[in-house]
Length: 193
Image 1 (cartoon, helix red, strand yellow):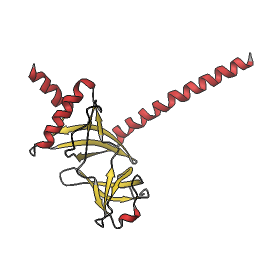
Image 2 (cartoon, rainbow, N blue to C red; image 1 turned 90 degrees about the horizontal axis):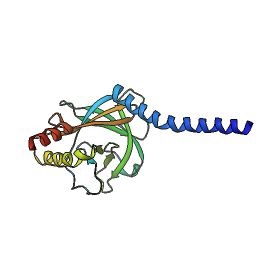
Image 3 (cartoon, rainbow, N blue to C red; image 1 turned 120 degrees about the vertical axis):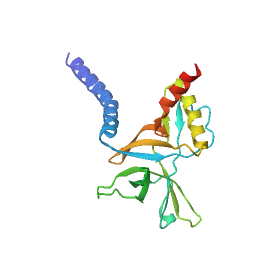
Image 4 (cartoon, rainbow, N blue to C red; image 1 turned 135 degrees about the horizontal axis):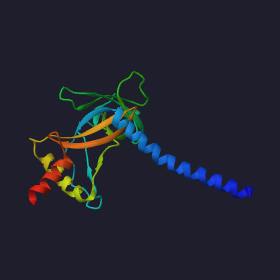
């Protein structure tokens, strides 16, 4: 009888741990969305996407490269801390990159080095952790087309709205001329009826 009680206790404990992990991830993301600082990252065109990826928009950012002092000191895939600021129009700008976490209350993002030049130009490209915007399956393809068209039209401004807190980031929305891409897709579908 005692073995059954121990097994039941272990089972309940394991079940609680399994529930805690995804719940903690959700709570942490919601905390970033509610308490994090909002940044607008301008996007830029990318090569046509792979049709097998489906259900999300691939994003590339204009502000993803910074000049560094010595390219030999940096490695591809290395963890880095990116200090951020905003320009006059409210778009995110890279203030600096560091291998160590800053403690001076600057907004920062923990990420990785995507690429470092090896030709003496001393450029480091940042691998942002929010390069995919997931959508409902029925709207994702139309959203991808709308996003691509906006990137080809120089009169339109596409950007990602990202919440950042304590080095973590959550991609909140993708907007074209200040309108969420979901709303544009819904309106376009209604106009086609």
